[in-house]
Length: 317
Ligand SMILES: [Mn+2]
Image (cartoon, protein in one colour):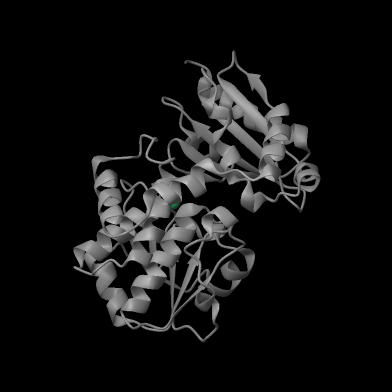
């Protein structure tokens, strides 16, 4: 059942012993929305805990160890999860069919929870949570504001992407006024690169190839590149934005080899190309200009399969 912001808050007020989950390979919005909700519920006197995959160092400032203290939960809430398949393998098998409330902002959301608060106009799950808390008249603490700012800033590419609305900027303004150190967070998240990451980026950029008169650019990441540079998938998220930064590119693709030999594909597009439609062909999804999917097969087969679909999408442009 779909619920409004106010109804979702009323549900949360009524329950206790809450477990919060987010999607695997957590990005800034996953971390931010999880911990913003954690702090807000703690401040309401609730017993709350979280389960999350490895978080990259740059995104880890909202994380607190206390949130991982185990207890038997009564209710499960997900944040920023568009499809239960995006939970980790373990949380999917334990809680996939037991989610009481899902809070999300993905247009392509595949409903899986008993109650769903979905606002597809929101730039980030963090924007949805801000609206819910503000609408309920709940005071937003500095800690909650910091976590919410992380999600809103990362899902909008630091307020550069077209999903940044006037309302998004209002939310950011409120968060800054409540104490979110925007300059410092922006520096840590968007400006700072580790030496290992710079080496990784060099290898990744060397793999870049363009197709269809330069309208499509593809980077292929192998497990060997992580090994050679001492990086991991968790701390190389920002690579997904690079191919689309090239002038004339309408579809930027990053194909990452996973440990099990399958491939994770991130697609970033510019209008009029829809990343979500490209990824839906392979059972994935996401937002219109940023989406993902997973494929298996040999590397060349995966690249060719993705290029074929992108070729179709670019045909009449
Ligand atoms: Mn998000």
